Image (tube, rainbow, N blue to C red; front, side):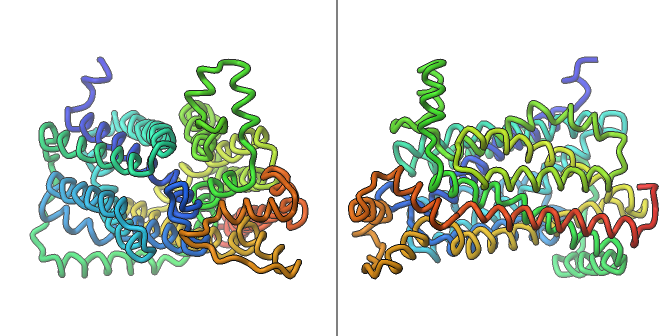
Length: 479
């Protein structure tokens, strides 16, 4: 039987919608840290690292927290209407976000985008579940996760090129992608069979809290969820912190020049007009590795005990993430991200698998749904690390201000009239450096790379806690 005949049309529509939505979400999300913090004379917003961390951490935490309660809406009004409402929030948020520069207004408008994502997120997964059978479920979700990663791979490539001309073009693209999704849903999406919920919204929320409370009485499961927060806190630094770190500290012109020797066409296609490789292009290598190697890694760890796979995977991911921040050699980062990706591919799918194994048969969906809570916690704490901790330890502007103060020089006020780039040019002039020499001086003097200790320590602490959990709490070799 052809693979296309195994699944109904709604399955393929849902997967197409997922691909486009992920392209829009990651198209913005992979460049968001730079948009929020880069110099205003580039069209970015020039916020502090602390502001960036709070905005990205809080909003993305809510994206994973709200689906518990917003699911009651889809149960009442149907999946199709919920998708349209979610996409409408997306479009409103994207359009408004492109038009505001005040921090609190950006916070609110990105929150509207987050609300759209929270409405959308559970619907497509539920649709895939309802349009597959016991025989086709494994293959169906394999296709679904492939679409997720393809969208995450394609979107940032497009927006990376668009932002080089004008940041508004990024918002035009992501808005257009969501408009395409509305058309797809209106024309082709058929409401899957579902159990209609006739409870009032208040009654639905009450039942949700009762179910959550029931799960929380399983203290071993609750402890596991708390431990896994550490993994997601570390993981989110790939999006919250690494783009800014690459932008501030790595001279990616070396990668561009190496590519140009092989093929000027490829270098031009992947690079910027300044002869560099944009940070989000480097970050996107993670999605490329997953598309290429996920099946291989999954095959290797398939028969491993779930907790052993998690422990091994998180250990490798922690080492890999640390390596991405340890050196300012731009070529080394590709190997470091590969190490991280292997750990991610080994551990992340096993978290859901493990929850499915330990869940009571009559509450599997509820337990698996609770796996979003560590993601919410990890995003929230990850935002703090990316903001306050990175801002104090590794932010280039912060370290340059410290250097000025140590010399008794007046520290200029950064604003729209005197931008971050103006400050860097002033510093280079006063120290008789070019920009590359200035970066090397700050790197060697203030050691911004030491942030790797923090991120790797979180991963290793998570591994240690999982080991203790397995040895002393579970005292079992079954899972």
